[in-house]
Image (cartoon, rainbow, N blue to C red; front, side):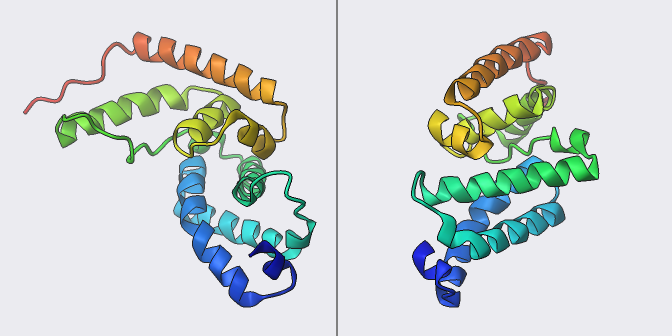
Length: 177
């Protein structure tokens, strides 16, 4: 499909857009915490894909390449807009519940959100890519343009810091029925 896009095939680009839009929207909405910002970045990302599809060399999966472009565009947007605090907030609405009621699940999500929001951006993103988008360390390194060992180090520190933050916050709030 990417070869067809590089040849200027608009139908192939429409198919690629449909295939990746939802995934990019989910990722970018979490990262920027704003649907409008996410849509702008998706459009920028897919415009770059349209322009540079012929430059893709197959060193990674197409999805990794596209997510990498989106990640870099999002960071540029975050830095330019100086909205670092807003970018630190997570929307964990998709986390699985284990038999608890909706209020308890919401309280747990908020508790985890508060912990995740206190992590440095790079550490939080490594957790996001791993647990919400099922990327391997190698794929994350490609997306973030850093060595695999850097990803592993960020993951180690993020988990350790999050554990400490959540323990310091005691237990998630108890919801009274």
